[in-house]
Image 1 (cartoon, rainbow, N blue to C red):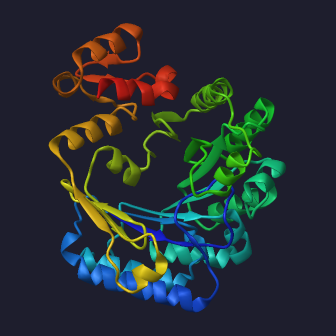
Image 2: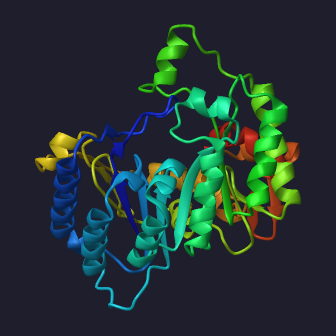
Length: 366
């Protein structure tokens, strides 16, 4: 299970606090690719084919030239000892609609040739005013055109991202966005509530009094609308923020929620080996120079807490006996009595109607 962080963007979104740099030259791409190839060579012993998935995120991976992606993917395949005709169980690349439209069908064919079998596209909204406020590079028309190009290019597993919980997002606009997303019939939809993250332009606006967050009531109402509409359209709600057609749940991300070890490559990427979490420096220049990040060895208590937290984010929940042994008995009893947890066979899970309140429910248990 491998994650690659591409730290380049053409512009920064209002809400984003993920590590990225504005791309300025082809040489930056070449230097980045060379550094990733070096990192793979130094960490070959960490690669395992037990969960043969590759996820390329960012940043904006679709700004990276195909020849750079190709060199990196080839090195990852080599580290995994993959045969020439062997494919990844799941190979996802995140893309911006503007990049797909601008680079066209040839770019999509190039992704397919690399072995990409799943694309995650950051649509966020189908309302142009909202997209402008987010400082997105695309508009609703280009999102639709990008989806068409991906489909016609043979990408038959597409996920699209949406954002809700903006204070200036009217309910009717949110409903229209959901309807337009459903009409495309993507295999997967991820929907995230807008949060004000330190380091983002939105944080600065909020600090200056230029933005006020949506009320909990507004955000919860929009989340409930999302759950209802996607459920009616046949999407399974398998994780708090993720919906999929049956059998098309994201395998890579699902492995995170199962606490499976993974290798993270590139600046700011995190890795996990089952006992230790490590991370690369969130600085491109330092990463290019071979600089080190940090690491921590998880205590048994931390492992238990993460196992509970990650499992209860999913519709499958957690083993009943494990939760009984590792949670506060009084809090567990209250959660069951209130319906914050429901029992199904040997599993306990948070019902969809309580997903919006899951952070508080999980916090009380652990």
